[in-house]
Image (cartoon, rainbow, N blue to C red; front, side, top):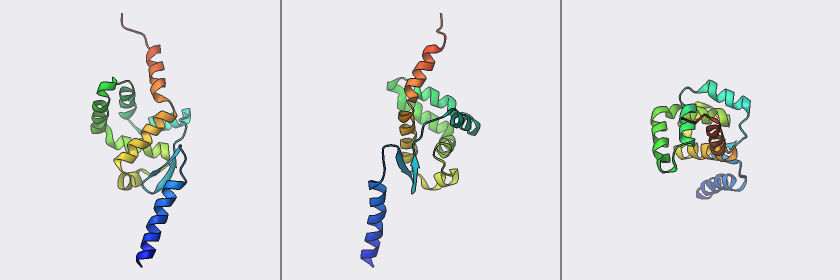
Length: 134
């Protein structure tokens, strides 16, 4: 009996470790892709959330020294929307995320999505296009 349990646990852990590439991860027990954000996906995100798009821009453009304060403030305001965004981006149901996905996994997924899509440099480029105060 102990051998069966150990074997089952070992096989689950092994499957999670061995088969992932740089654009994959687990949210709970679900394997997901970190994908490119298309215009259609952006539209879907903006239809899903109210406050978070503005908060994301604020986080991306936050001074490096204040980055974590911005993140914590954004979570306090719109944590539910963070889970909704991950649901839209990953294709995993919101209810599953709410009950089975750790906060660390949510942030890792978002961080890897930001990195893959170079959203930090996009925010800087957009900011440079805005008129400056005179």
